[in-house]
Image 1 (cartoon, rainbow over the protein chains, first blue to last red):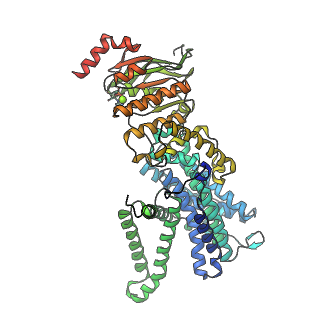
Image 2 (cartoon, each protein chain N blue to C red; image 1 turned 60 degrees about the horizontal axis):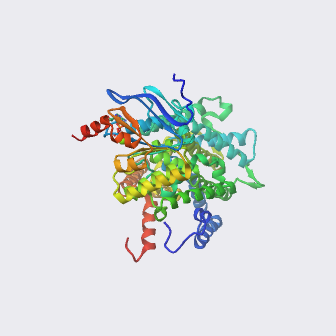
Image 3 (cartoon, protein in one colour; image 1 turned 180 degrees about the vertical axis):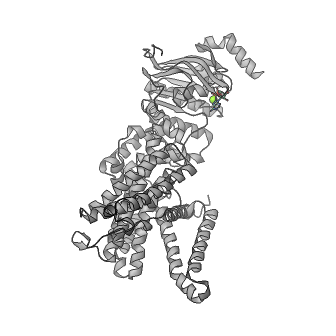
Length: 350
Length: 262
Ligand SMILES: Nc1ncnc2c1ncn2[C@@H]1O[C@H](COP(=O)(O)OP(=O)(O)O)[C@@H](O)[C@H]1O
Ligand SMILES: [Mg+2]
């Protein structure tokens, strides 16, 4: 809802993404700050930064599939894997340009994802969740059982000396900028999709698939499309991950990662692109906290041993997330919307 | 099958339709035809099969026997969305609105099949995609203005009162630019004034678009005022199909209504 007193003079400006001058200025500042940050940040924060950007891309895709279209998706990590392998293979063997390999890796993942989306036409909820877990199994099976010369088997594929427009991608700063640029494109694209007829068809299918069908929406196709979008986003994220680590292997793409992404999406708030971004930041920071606090705790209580400390901290983090979901099931974005509205209407309580 | 599917002068028809749920026969050998630019009222006691018949006509229920035709096509095997795209729009008895979406977005969903923007061009938000959005937004705004719901256009439909929701439901159906409109008890639960408003909207639609309408309604006054023809169902059977005046004097109809009330 807009603050009272602001009216839009045309339907075009009413639909625009950034609608007021202060909003545009704030956004420009944020982007500039993000772009300049690696010049002052330490290596570790730069690496955390691009890891977040990559995760955000995959979580945005998940948000469109689950938050908007209402389709459970536990295959996001496997879809990332397909994109990563696709991209790495194209860079390794035909030595394609980076951007082209990234996009084609995304397309490969999208096709793989849409196949699972087709099953969503027939099944819902728990059974759909099981089916998307099968994506994980199939991904593992294919990579590990295809001839070793194809995808490198258990050892994976290595990528060396990647370049983009004459710049080496061999350092963390350039990876940071590449992933930031990708995140900006993918975020803008997500807003384009959700504001289009496709976004509305996703929400219609989520809210009431009977009505959606009667409105001329092919419900089965819409669900497949939602998975296609999710897997495309995951595929781009996976390709970036391969480029960032200069290496791909199956154990980077576990079912556990899919579950983390679902947590990020829900903590941020279902059905919000910005929520996907915020949820990813919060959870990644919390996980980073666990990773950096862990060794100190191990030093403090040597008898506990490293395994136990890390395991119990992950349990603690999991508990915090579950508690959060119990008390704030609609996510951070929902809370932000409420306080924004209250602030705008102040001093008139609603 | 029946050879008379392509009846000229007939927009929509069900032919000898039988529909069962387990042991319940919801529709028993029912035929109905709706002519171009005709308002047919469908009445009958509760449980008579009125909603079932609308569901059969719109492809949501598949009858055990009989056929359904629309514009000369046998649509018995068409998926629901294809029937909708061919121009059949309906409203529901209980609202099937998209509760989390705004009034405007609900109505824009009705424009879905008229828009062309592909997924990649939505992603890139090409100028074409933007122009299309604005164009269809214009059409949605005209409907919003027509139904006098401007003040709630950005409100989620779930937060609206019953009468408003029914209007949005009608608006969404109109946004489809239907060639036939099926309305399932659009005025149920409304007060006199709300009913009058909705009746006026329906009459205005007919005047502007000249499309056939099938109206399920309980209020006899409304039915007698608006309908060109009245079809009466009772226990899944058609017991009358005539002008409002003739139906009012039909003994079987009177018995059915008295019987239902007794
Ligand atoms: N989905 C369904 N499952 C089982 N029985 C149904 C279903 N829909 C309708 N019926 C039954 O069919 C009969 C006709 O119902 P309906 O068409 O809703 O009547 P009306 O709209 O005239 O009140 C009723 O006996 C009802 O119980
Ligand atoms: Mg009914």
